[in-house]
Image (cartoon, rainbow, N blue to C red; front, side, top):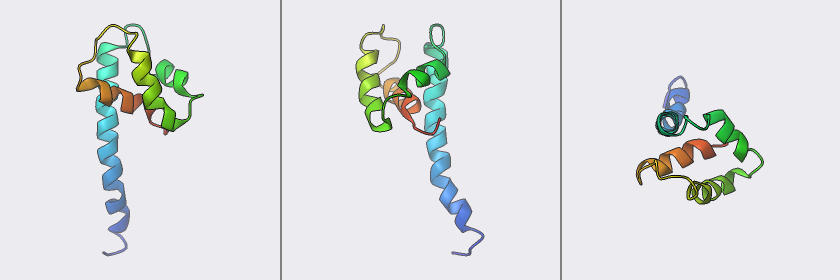
Length: 85
């Protein structure tokens, strides 16, 4: 692979992750932002180790009214749990 194409090839998987996270954040903003901001929810998770965040969120969300479908829940958990923000 030519050297100038290598950086682009390395970024392709990152762009796919960004799309996934973006979808979870969009769902959060559409269904959860009446009571919570995305930044506030992520701040609540800041003290938790990144590996523990998905399980913590899954348990926490059991106490909330069911606003998220079975397909939306993992996308929102993934977006909130990511360690990059």
